Amino acid sequence: MKRCLYIWLAVTMTAGIITVQANAGDQDHGLECTNTTAVEMFLPDTGQQHCFDDSRLIPCPKPGEAFFGEDGNYLINKPSYSVIEQGQEYIVLDQVTGLTWRKINSQGATWSEALDAVDSQCSKSGEKWRLPTIYELETLGSFGSDQGIVFAVFNAAGDVSDCFWSVTSLGNTREAIGYCSAANEVKIFDIDEKLKVLAVKGASLTTGRFLKSTNGTVTDETSGLMFQADEQEPMTWKQALKYCQGLQLGGFTDWRLPNIKELLSIVVFRDKLPLVNSRFFPGARAGAYWSSTTCEDAPYMAWVVDFSNGKPYRGGFKNRRYFVRAVRGGRVLTRD
Image (cartoon, rainbow, N blue to C red; front, side, top):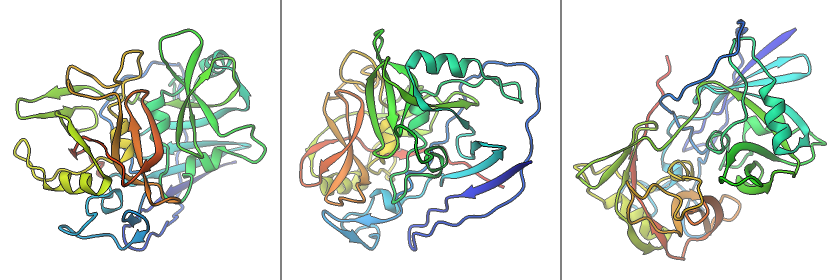
Protein backbone atom coordinates (compact mmCIF):
# COMPACT_ATOMS: atom_id res chain seq x y z
CA MET A 1 0.00 0.00 0.00
CA LYS A 2 1.24 3.47 -0.85
CA ARG A 3 1.22 6.21 1.77
CA CYS A 4 1.76 9.88 1.12
CA LEU A 5 2.96 12.38 3.74
CA TYR A 6 3.01 16.08 2.95
CA ILE A 7 5.82 17.53 5.03
CA TRP A 8 5.96 21.32 5.41
CA LEU A 9 9.18 22.85 6.70
CA ALA A 10 7.63 26.01 8.12
CA VAL A 11 10.52 28.42 8.63
CA THR A 12 9.50 31.20 11.00
CA MET A 13 11.83 34.11 11.75
CA THR A 14 10.65 34.50 15.34
CA ALA A 15 10.05 31.21 17.11
CA GLY A 16 12.11 28.95 14.81
CA ILE A 17 9.51 26.16 14.81
CA ILE A 18 9.21 23.35 12.28
CA THR A 19 5.58 22.32 11.76
CA VAL A 20 4.59 18.98 10.23
CA GLN A 21 1.18 18.32 8.66
CA ALA A 22 -0.09 15.17 6.92
CA ASN A 23 -2.54 14.93 4.02
CA ALA A 24 -3.45 12.48 1.28
CA GLY A 25 -1.74 12.38 -2.14
CA ASP A 26 -2.31 11.11 -5.68
CA GLN A 27 -0.70 8.51 -7.90
CA ASP A 28 1.16 9.06 -11.18
CA HIS A 29 -0.05 7.43 -14.40
CA GLY A 30 1.49 7.39 -17.89
CA LEU A 31 3.17 5.42 -20.66
CA GLU A 32 6.23 6.70 -22.50
CA CYS A 33 9.41 8.46 -21.41
CA THR A 34 9.71 12.05 -22.63
CA ASN A 35 12.31 14.80 -22.31
CA THR A 36 11.99 17.84 -20.04
CA THR A 37 12.43 21.52 -20.79
CA ALA A 38 13.58 24.50 -18.74
CA VAL A 39 10.94 26.62 -17.00
CA GLU A 40 10.78 29.50 -14.54
CA MET A 41 12.65 28.62 -11.37
CA PHE A 42 11.45 29.09 -7.80
CA LEU A 43 14.48 29.01 -5.53
CA PRO A 44 13.77 27.45 -2.10
CA ASP A 45 14.77 29.33 1.04
CA THR A 46 17.97 28.29 2.79
CA GLY A 47 16.12 27.23 5.93
CA GLN A 48 18.06 29.66 8.14
CA GLN A 49 15.61 31.13 10.64
CA HIS A 50 17.98 32.61 13.24
CA CYS A 51 20.00 35.83 13.22
CA PHE A 52 23.57 36.49 14.29
CA ASP A 53 26.06 39.29 14.81
CA ASP A 54 29.82 38.84 14.35
CA SER A 55 30.04 36.07 16.91
CA ARG A 56 26.75 34.92 18.46
CA LEU A 57 23.01 34.37 18.16
CA ILE A 58 20.95 37.57 18.50
CA PRO A 59 17.28 38.58 18.16
CA CYS A 60 16.64 39.28 14.49
CA PRO A 61 17.44 42.98 13.91
CA LYS A 62 14.96 45.47 12.54
CA PRO A 63 15.50 47.85 9.60
CA GLY A 64 18.13 50.42 10.47
CA GLU A 65 19.72 48.27 13.17
CA ALA A 66 23.16 46.69 12.88
CA PHE A 67 23.21 43.36 11.00
CA PHE A 68 19.77 43.86 9.46
CA GLY A 69 19.51 42.25 6.04
CA GLU A 70 21.02 38.88 6.92
CA ASP A 71 19.52 35.58 5.83
CA GLY A 72 17.35 35.16 8.92
CA ASN A 73 15.53 38.42 8.19
CA TYR A 74 14.03 37.00 5.00
CA LEU A 75 11.80 34.05 4.17
CA ILE A 76 11.39 33.48 0.43
CA ASN A 77 9.75 30.25 -0.75
CA LYS A 78 9.82 28.20 2.45
CA PRO A 79 10.91 24.59 1.86
CA SER A 80 7.95 22.23 1.46
CA TYR A 81 7.95 18.54 0.48
CA SER A 82 5.65 15.56 0.13
CA VAL A 83 7.09 12.13 0.89
CA ILE A 84 5.48 9.12 -0.75
CA GLU A 85 6.23 5.65 0.57
CA GLN A 86 5.94 2.90 -2.06
CA GLY A 87 6.81 -0.42 -0.46
CA GLN A 88 10.45 -0.12 0.56
CA GLU A 89 11.04 2.99 -1.57
CA TYR A 90 10.48 6.68 -0.90
CA ILE A 91 9.62 9.28 -3.53
CA VAL A 92 10.00 12.95 -2.52
CA LEU A 93 8.24 15.84 -4.30
CA ASP A 94 9.70 19.31 -3.78
CA GLN A 95 6.66 21.58 -3.67
CA VAL A 96 8.78 24.68 -4.45
CA THR A 97 10.85 23.56 -7.43
CA GLY A 98 8.37 20.95 -8.68
CA LEU A 99 11.11 18.32 -8.90
CA THR A 100 10.54 14.73 -7.81
CA TRP A 101 13.39 12.72 -6.27
CA ARG A 102 14.15 9.05 -5.66
CA LYS A 103 17.22 7.11 -4.56
CA ILE A 104 18.67 4.74 -7.16
CA ASN A 105 21.79 3.55 -5.38
CA SER A 106 22.94 3.93 -1.77
CA GLN A 107 25.96 1.62 -1.91
CA GLY A 108 28.02 3.70 -4.29
CA ALA A 109 28.43 3.90 -8.06
CA THR A 110 30.93 5.40 -10.45
CA TRP A 111 29.79 8.36 -12.53
CA SER A 112 29.21 6.27 -15.66
CA GLU A 113 27.36 3.64 -13.60
CA ALA A 114 25.20 6.41 -12.16
CA LEU A 115 24.38 7.76 -15.63
CA ASP A 116 23.47 4.26 -16.88
CA ALA A 117 21.37 3.42 -13.82
CA VAL A 118 19.32 6.60 -14.00
CA ASP A 119 18.97 6.47 -17.78
CA SER A 120 17.22 3.11 -17.53
CA GLN A 121 14.46 4.46 -15.29
CA CYS A 122 11.09 5.59 -16.64
CA SER A 123 8.46 7.02 -14.31
CA LYS A 124 4.79 6.08 -14.26
CA SER A 125 3.90 9.60 -15.40
CA GLY A 126 5.86 9.12 -18.61
CA GLU A 127 8.74 11.39 -17.65
CA LYS A 128 12.28 10.13 -17.80
CA TRP A 129 14.31 10.05 -14.62
CA ARG A 130 17.71 11.71 -14.97
CA LEU A 131 20.86 12.45 -13.02
CA PRO A 132 20.43 15.93 -11.45
CA THR A 133 22.57 18.95 -12.24
CA ILE A 134 24.63 20.47 -9.46
CA TYR A 135 22.18 23.40 -9.37
CA GLU A 136 19.30 21.00 -8.68
CA LEU A 137 21.20 19.23 -5.89
CA GLU A 138 22.10 22.58 -4.33
CA THR A 139 18.42 23.54 -4.04
CA LEU A 140 17.98 20.67 -1.55
CA GLY A 141 20.57 22.04 0.87
CA SER A 142 19.50 23.23 4.32
CA PHE A 143 21.62 25.91 5.98
CA GLY A 144 19.62 25.96 9.19
CA SER A 145 20.02 23.71 12.20
CA ASP A 146 18.98 20.52 10.37
CA GLN A 147 20.25 18.65 7.32
CA GLY A 148 17.00 19.01 5.37
CA ILE A 149 14.13 16.57 4.95
CA VAL A 150 15.19 15.20 1.55
CA PHE A 151 18.62 14.10 2.70
CA ALA A 152 17.16 12.89 5.99
CA VAL A 153 14.89 10.60 3.97
CA PHE A 154 17.58 9.32 1.62
CA ASN A 155 20.59 9.14 3.95
CA ALA A 156 19.66 5.88 5.65
CA ALA A 157 21.89 4.35 8.30
CA GLY A 158 24.64 2.26 6.76
CA ASP A 159 24.99 4.28 3.56
CA VAL A 160 28.59 4.58 2.43
CA SER A 161 28.67 8.38 2.29
CA ASP A 162 26.48 11.46 2.09
CA CYS A 163 27.86 12.51 -1.32
CA PHE A 164 25.74 12.32 -4.49
CA TRP A 165 26.68 12.50 -8.16
CA SER A 166 25.51 15.32 -10.39
CA VAL A 167 25.52 15.22 -14.19
CA THR A 168 27.65 18.41 -14.18
CA SER A 169 31.29 18.15 -15.22
CA LEU A 170 34.07 20.61 -15.96
CA GLY A 171 34.46 19.62 -19.59
CA ASN A 172 37.14 16.98 -19.16
CA THR A 173 36.71 13.23 -19.28
CA ARG A 174 38.01 12.32 -15.82
CA GLU A 175 36.14 14.53 -13.35
CA ALA A 176 32.54 15.29 -12.41
CA ILE A 177 30.92 17.32 -9.64
CA GLY A 178 29.24 15.87 -6.59
CA TYR A 179 27.27 17.32 -3.68
CA CYS A 180 27.90 16.27 -0.07
CA SER A 181 24.78 16.99 1.94
CA ALA A 182 26.07 17.00 5.53
CA ALA A 183 28.48 19.87 4.88
CA ASN A 184 26.58 21.44 1.93
CA GLU A 185 29.81 20.95 0.01
CA VAL A 186 30.33 20.99 -3.75
CA LYS A 187 33.30 18.78 -4.64
CA ILE A 188 35.08 17.59 -7.75
CA PHE A 189 35.48 13.81 -7.90
CA ASP A 190 37.30 11.42 -10.19
CA ILE A 191 34.61 9.66 -12.24
CA ASP A 192 35.77 6.26 -10.95
CA GLU A 193 35.00 7.16 -7.34
CA LYS A 194 31.81 5.72 -5.88
CA LEU A 195 29.09 8.11 -4.73
CA LYS A 196 25.40 7.68 -3.99
CA VAL A 197 22.85 8.31 -6.73
CA LEU A 198 19.65 10.35 -6.62
CA ALA A 199 17.43 10.45 -9.69
CA VAL A 200 15.19 13.41 -10.47
CA LYS A 201 12.31 14.09 -12.83
CA GLY A 202 10.52 17.27 -13.77
CA ALA A 203 11.38 20.36 -15.78
CA SER A 204 15.11 20.99 -15.59
CA LEU A 205 16.16 23.88 -13.35
CA THR A 206 18.43 26.29 -15.18
CA THR A 207 19.88 29.63 -14.16
CA GLY A 208 21.71 32.38 -15.98
CA ARG A 209 19.12 33.44 -18.55
CA PHE A 210 20.32 36.97 -17.99
CA LEU A 211 18.90 40.30 -19.11
CA LYS A 212 21.29 43.24 -18.77
CA SER A 213 19.97 46.76 -18.26
CA THR A 214 21.63 50.12 -18.78
CA ASN A 215 20.86 51.03 -15.14
CA GLY A 216 23.62 48.88 -13.65
CA THR A 217 21.51 45.77 -13.01
CA VAL A 218 21.38 42.23 -14.38
CA THR A 219 18.18 40.15 -14.09
CA ASP A 220 18.08 36.37 -14.22
CA GLU A 221 14.79 35.80 -16.04
CA THR A 222 14.64 32.22 -14.75
CA SER A 223 14.84 32.93 -11.01
CA GLY A 224 13.57 36.52 -11.12
CA LEU A 225 16.60 37.68 -9.14
CA MET A 226 18.09 41.08 -10.02
CA PHE A 227 21.81 41.45 -9.34
CA GLN A 228 24.10 44.42 -9.12
CA ALA A 229 26.23 44.37 -12.28
CA ASP A 230 29.32 46.12 -10.92
CA GLU A 231 31.86 44.93 -8.39
CA GLN A 232 32.40 46.38 -4.95
CA GLU A 233 35.70 46.49 -3.12
CA PRO A 234 36.18 43.92 -0.33
CA MET A 235 34.51 44.67 3.00
CA THR A 236 33.60 42.87 6.22
CA TRP A 237 30.33 40.95 6.57
CA LYS A 238 28.79 43.67 8.75
CA GLN A 239 29.81 46.34 6.24
CA ALA A 240 28.45 44.24 3.37
CA LEU A 241 25.03 43.96 5.01
CA LYS A 242 24.91 47.71 5.64
CA TYR A 243 26.12 48.56 2.14
CA CYS A 244 23.45 46.46 0.44
CA GLN A 245 20.68 47.82 2.67
CA GLY A 246 21.65 51.38 1.80
CA LEU A 247 22.13 50.80 -1.92
CA GLN A 248 20.01 52.78 -4.37
CA LEU A 249 20.43 51.38 -7.86
CA GLY A 250 18.27 51.14 -10.98
CA GLY A 251 15.43 52.96 -9.25
CA PHE A 252 15.21 50.35 -6.48
CA THR A 253 16.00 50.60 -2.77
CA ASP A 254 15.16 47.05 -1.61
CA TRP A 255 18.63 45.62 -2.18
CA ARG A 256 20.12 43.03 0.15
CA LEU A 257 23.13 40.76 0.48
CA PRO A 258 22.26 37.49 -1.34
CA ASN A 259 21.82 34.31 0.64
CA ILE A 260 24.05 31.37 -0.24
CA LYS A 261 21.59 29.75 -2.67
CA GLU A 262 21.03 33.03 -4.51
CA LEU A 263 24.78 33.60 -4.81
CA LEU A 264 25.35 30.05 -6.07
CA SER A 265 22.72 30.56 -8.78
CA ILE A 266 25.09 32.69 -10.89
CA VAL A 267 27.99 30.21 -10.84
CA VAL A 268 28.98 28.87 -14.26
CA PHE A 269 31.03 25.68 -14.07
CA ARG A 270 33.71 25.84 -16.75
CA ASP A 271 37.48 25.87 -17.13
CA LYS A 272 37.80 29.65 -17.61
CA LEU A 273 37.97 31.87 -14.53
CA PRO A 274 36.15 33.56 -12.89
CA LEU A 275 33.20 31.19 -12.92
CA VAL A 276 30.57 33.79 -13.73
CA ASN A 277 29.28 35.13 -17.06
CA SER A 278 31.73 37.93 -17.87
CA ARG A 279 29.44 39.33 -20.57
CA PHE A 280 26.95 40.36 -17.90
CA PHE A 281 29.37 40.75 -14.97
CA PRO A 282 32.50 42.09 -16.70
CA GLY A 283 34.28 43.08 -13.49
CA ALA A 284 33.77 39.77 -11.70
CA ARG A 285 36.73 38.60 -9.64
CA ALA A 286 38.03 35.08 -9.22
CA GLY A 287 37.70 35.35 -5.46
CA ALA A 288 35.38 34.99 -2.48
CA TYR A 289 32.02 36.81 -2.26
CA TRP A 290 29.92 37.22 0.86
CA SER A 291 26.52 35.64 1.31
CA SER A 292 24.08 36.71 4.03
CA THR A 293 23.98 33.17 5.43
CA THR A 294 25.75 32.52 8.74
CA CYS A 295 27.36 29.20 9.65
CA GLU A 296 25.01 28.29 12.49
CA ASP A 297 27.44 26.04 14.34
CA ALA A 298 30.20 28.68 14.05
CA PRO A 299 28.43 32.07 14.02
CA TYR A 300 31.66 34.04 13.71
CA MET A 301 31.74 32.74 10.11
CA ALA A 302 29.41 33.17 7.12
CA TRP A 303 29.06 31.22 3.90
CA VAL A 304 30.95 32.54 0.89
CA VAL A 305 31.19 31.48 -2.76
CA ASP A 306 34.66 31.37 -4.27
CA PHE A 307 34.33 32.30 -7.92
CA SER A 308 37.76 30.87 -8.67
CA ASN A 309 36.25 27.37 -8.41
CA GLY A 310 32.48 27.91 -8.02
CA LYS A 311 32.32 26.29 -4.59
CA PRO A 312 30.50 27.41 -1.43
CA TYR A 313 32.64 27.59 1.70
CA ARG A 314 31.67 27.95 5.33
CA GLY A 315 35.03 29.45 6.29
CA GLY A 316 34.33 33.15 5.80
CA PHE A 317 35.40 34.78 9.08
CA LYS A 318 33.10 37.76 9.36
CA ASN A 319 35.86 40.23 10.16
CA ARG A 320 37.67 39.41 6.92
CA ARG A 321 37.09 41.41 3.74
CA TYR A 322 35.47 39.76 0.74
CA PHE A 323 33.77 40.98 -2.42
CA VAL A 324 30.10 41.98 -2.50
CA ARG A 325 27.34 41.79 -5.10
CA ALA A 326 23.87 42.96 -4.04
CA VAL A 327 20.61 41.27 -5.07
CA ARG A 328 16.91 42.02 -4.92
CA GLY A 329 13.63 40.40 -5.93
CA GLY A 330 13.30 36.72 -6.75
CA ARG A 331 10.41 34.70 -8.11
CA VAL A 332 7.94 33.96 -5.30
CA LEU A 333 5.72 30.88 -5.40
CA THR A 334 2.09 31.61 -4.54
CA ARG A 335 0.09 28.77 -3.03
CA ASP A 336 -3.68 28.48 -2.89
